Length: 137
Image 1 (cartoon, rainbow, N blue to C red):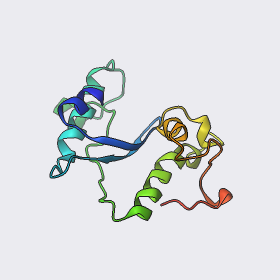
Image 2 (tube, rainbow, N blue to C red):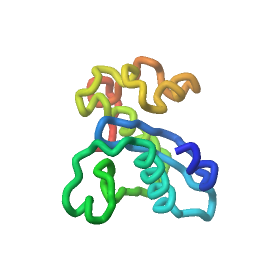
Image 3 (cartoon, one colour):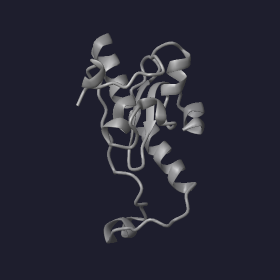
Image 4 (cartoon, rainbow, N blue to C red):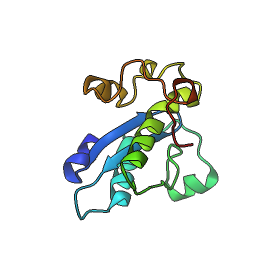
């Protein structure tokens, strides 16, 4: 991610890595909408850094693909401040949503600790209905 960011800049507003997927809210420079190149390079560089131990389908093996990533990605253009906040909240609540931790602060593989340091979230923010915070499903 760092090496791709050096060549193709973007700002990370929210990021979480889970065992089988990731979510992020990133911002590209003005006039740049090339999400595809960034994701292709991030996936490629990450995959090359791992040993080839995953099970591959016949199709992936024939194409020389790894079995780590989905072939596609989803992008969503943020509409306004409320939409931005809902998506950043969604990113950070994901480890709780998937039952990996009980509290957002327990998951170390996200931007949540940095955003706590910056005063964006309180350390005990948990998200979801139990705290009165809504998030996008």
